[in-house]
Length: 205
Image (cartoon, rainbow, N blue to C red; front, side, top):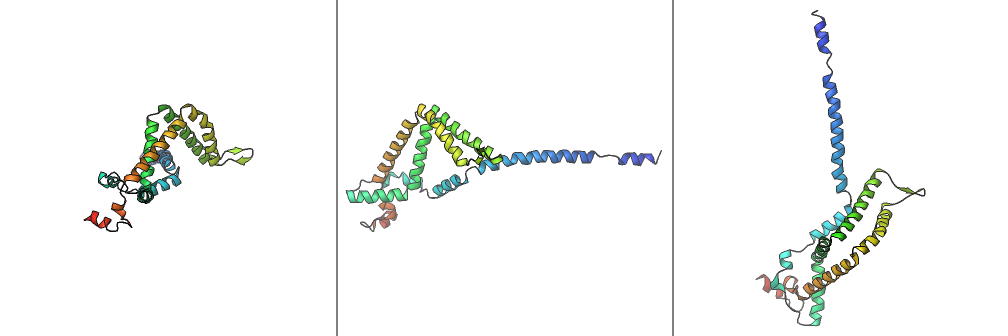
């Protein structure tokens, strides 16, 4: 009797069973943790381009500083001022354009739904291509061509919800704001001018 008790106590495999369960749970957790990584790598080129634009954004306080607004004295100075402003504030102007697009989407619910549906279809295609490539007629269909097909199929929907009018409004409003700012913003106060070489030093003092 005393010899059988230790043998019975040695037969306990509960530790191995729990380890297997933990391994399966860890596998599921690892799979779920991979999803945010895939979302972050969805469009690296777009993120890189947007990051470069953000790095080149000039201070917004200087961009809207009313003390720097001044009417150009003549046409020659106006053309030079517009060119310098567009080159210096190009990233700021781009974000103004994006802000007008977002405003247009927010104020147009149907257009927002159409854009969301189109982007959702592109996202589903990107996930499907990550798992398995789409073959049509024995040839692999590139993801860019699939995006183009979604865009073409979405054109009638965009036309119905008034995307054309919204696009013209955004372009017109952006052109008006950018030209108005570039015309009256005295960029010479920041960069100096060949006609007024001491303007920069006077502003700094």
